[in-house]
Amino acid sequence: MKPVPRLLGYALAAGPAFFLPFAYLVTVGWLVVYGLPAAYHGEEMPEPEEWFFTVSRYGFYTLVVQWPVYLLWALFTRRLTARLKLLWVGVLAVFSLFSIPWFLYAMFRRTEKVELIRFIRRRSVRRFFAKGLAGELPPPLRFHADLPPEYRRVRFRCAEADVPPEFRVVTAWNPGGERVEVAENLVADEHLRNEIARLGLESFPVTGGSPDFSHAEPGYGIVCDRAEAVLLARRFRQQAFYEVLGGRVYLVSVHEGHAPGDPIGRWRDLVVEGAGDAPLVYGS
Image (tube, rainbow, N blue to C red; front, side):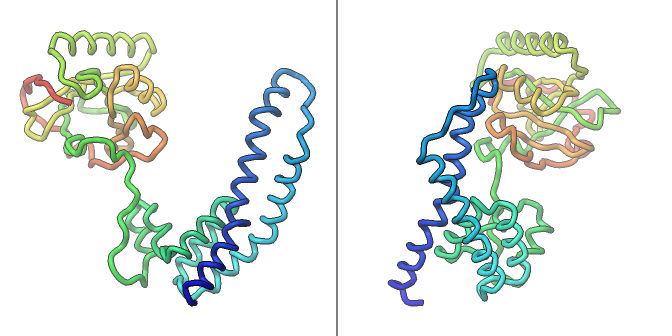
């Protein structure tokens, strides 16, 4: 397709496509701002203004019209492999209001082959849908990118031979990633230990450090869920914590507590035995 007709066609399609998420946000926004507070206080539901009904109604109409069009487009385009067609059709079917403008944007930028794959972090799944693509696969979307690379090279010292199948490792040392005096770190560590006891959580000492333990920070393996670990780590101004699930260690940023943890390795491989008492030095 020539540049000018192509640009004109995508520009005309962009209006109704991007109207869908706008109509959704307007509808949900009205319910959150007006509908739910009235229902919570037992009051009569306020009557929406005419423009609200207009936006909601046309949002429904544009969805009914566009949904089959985009599904057929994804199924019959020659720019996608059979597996990528399956992936896009599934996304369009489940997330139609937001995936329709996303698909249009990807087709316009000619990134439809890699747009979804880069969000898939499991290697086997990525390779399944990327079969038949020329060139290298796009890098997966990385979570917890705000954390220093040293956090992913951690080693642990732990006296417990049989650790629980699920726990989180939290420290109170060096809050905010800033170097502080040992005495201040010890006070913070005591506060963390008292807080764990107050919450009634099972815990045991765990020290995390660099591979040679030239840097080490004492902490605790805490039997709690991720939400509790996020709150604890935030309260003690930590940037991240580690979670151990079924023998696997994951790194979690306190700023992305909702995201999957970055895999670090197996707990048994990261626990250093016979390391002696590592020096407690400063560092983030």
